[in-house]
Image (tube, rainbow, N blue to C red):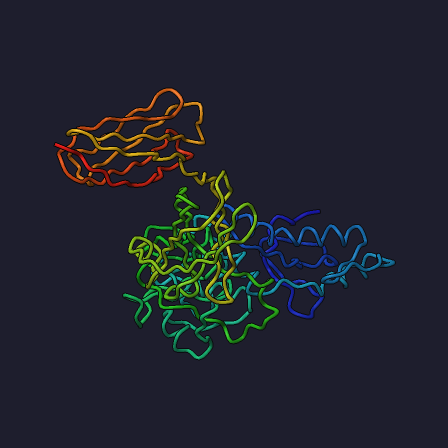
Length: 446
């Protein structure tokens, strides 16, 4: 069937007649319709695949029409008696206009179409594939998707001040992102918000001379310092967006380390829709929720990269039995407009204490004697060490290697008088930790 490579134009809402396109010629009984397909992108590659999926959805409906099958949104229907009936049924299956615009905007970033100062500011919106500037590109996309002219001006006059758009704190793909110096009006740049990529906002835009229309991501200077906000077209309805697409939480599970009686976790999490708010992370141990930890630790490095303000780091000690455990952390949104995200899992060993006994301490002539035993239960076949202190003075601290059956009987030179002698059992393996076996007071004679 000829001319199925470029299916750009939407069917006029409620109409079964196709719209003429100079690039192609289709049989008069085949309608250009596109099924709603939408999901959150996790990379630029995914975003391009999304665009291709939306643009190719028309081929599916054409093929179904050829086979004499019809679809209605959300349900299958019986095969019609003739091909014309199938085409009539499929013609009512429309792509949401904002979703359709996002797909086309992403597609335009793959064509190498170059930025042109003043481009797109003629008497009507520029045709697809034209060399345009940032506001000309926005005008072109809305002209394509809504068959309307939002005006011939700057992003500021055309979007922020026109009364045709309303600022929103909960953008959907297809809304307009405006940028001004340090986030202040007037806007100097505009782009089509396409959703979140790897947990960060992205836009399709014509940005500057010498560069093509491209996807601009969070690490561009626009996002990091100059984002003013998002504006939603008043002419759009709820039906013009695909299924609700939530912004994805961003964050990192930095570390998990075993400590006596448990482990300690650290990392950060930011809700991209509420960057000034603290949030929580859910900590699970072996698939069981054990704690919800608030991100109340300052992380200047995170704020610098994400453009957030306030505290977004977390660190917490969790009490857990001795042994190996799988620890997972999930970032939870501060509000209802973002989606939680699993920050990953780590294997942690919670150490056990060494064991032993400080049996006796006796004093003699200018000496004392300490006896007892010590063992690392994680390496019970290996002799470990004890640390003996006298009166807590560093100059007499010593580490004594114990051999044999883990017992020790140690003579220690000392001055005459009363002394406090303490014994600490130290581990030989990372699966254990040191333990104080106790202290005793002893008198040394002259």
